[in-house]
Length: 104
Image (cartoon, rainbow, N blue to C red; front, side):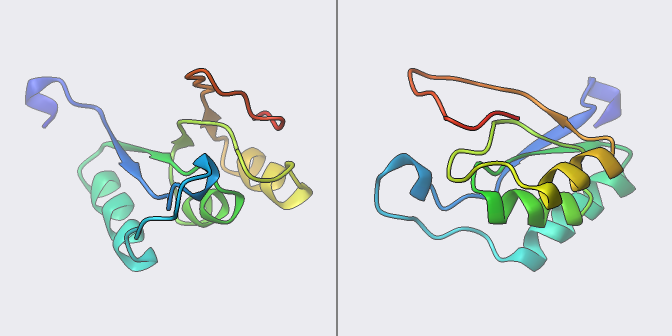
């Protein structure tokens, strides 16, 4: 993948409940962890769409290199901030007409 200029992957680990729509099935946690591990084994960064607090914490604990959106369903708490700081994580705010009251 490096040969064609790929240096990162993005995966979605969310049930989309934060959108107000009915939740959809999400991948199993062990699958998410395996994808992140494999990306790192290949020398790639792994960025994750995980706008729910629970899912965001899970991906940070699994070693994700960053979050692609802010947390949409809860205020940031001390554990989340510690996970971000301890792992030197990145987060991007991406707004599409909706604004979360909580920011990363």
